[in-house]
Image (cartoon, rainbow, N blue to C red; front, side, top):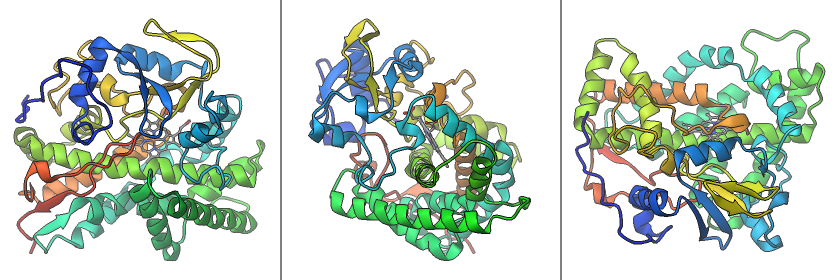
Length: 426
Ligand code: HEM
């Protein structure tokens, strides 16, 4: 086990949150919160007041607590602050009824429906396509000797993968890439552009679903796409409205996109910072083994995962978390990144150990909203990291680590760019 960069010291007094330093390395501040104020009331940059839950045991309990609703109608804030707890533009575009914004029984019905279509089998059958996409993207920069791994690799891979899986025709996929790019670049920024992108995506999806429904063959082809599978599942028994179907496609794209970009980005970055760990992984890949890759991707999710805070929850009753009273209507944000470094749960939590076995991290959440796309994310993460390290074995960071910039979003943690150099492929 090794960590070449020692962790920054834990601050001695209450740290300032949501600053530039915090975005670069939030872990010392989270260590302070876990110890001194594990359920912490704070004002978010958007002006919304919320509780931050940072200990593993409290986080796990809160994620499974059904008194905490996912539906923003339960937020006690005024109309203005309520609007700041969703994806910008989403409400207007009528894409609210997706899995991450609803509770049982609607959640149970929609999750059952999508689970019928989004099966582990369908994902496993998709592995060769993910490998092909990964190789094609690496082909596009391998001979240059340098690249920005976020823009040229981590960003396009998941969007093309999800588009393919859903059944978005290849000729339309670049539009998706543009809309998604707008959302990721300006997630918390200029609302106009994001709202327009969401609206365009919503209109496109509605039309695509309409067309697929009209053209659906009586019996499914073996390689039927996910959207068709979803329509088929809904037509046989339980009902899925067109709006729910569009919202479902939207959340699959949205939840599966920036997360996977950041898994590849943060994961590669941490491997470059931990040369001994990376060398062990390269040796094991060269020997044709997969074990260290599989535990390694889980460890990278724990150590510096893409989802810093789980999505919004709102108290529907008075309750206590970790001894702290929470009032009806209060927003609760579970800090997955803090819980996953809790020394009460993980041995040497600030050490990256790709071979870590006892690793029930919360990077994919917990409870009924546990990540639906985890098998796809694992598939993409493993293919991306293994192929990069195998094809570009001397991959290294260009410039200084201190020059890297992190996106300042609330929910996600990820790099704006990851410039690298390597010996060009011949
Ligand atoms: C839910 C993480 C990739 C689809 C979640 C949640 C987390 C998460 C933490 C729970 C949020 C909460 O409880 O508030 C991740 C990470 C990923 C990833 C770290 C990549 C490394 C994907 C992919 C897809 C996807 C590739 C689909 C294509 C979903 C969906 C939900 C979800 C639909 C909502 C499930 C529900 O509410 O029942 N994800 N995700 N995710 N994820 Fe992922």
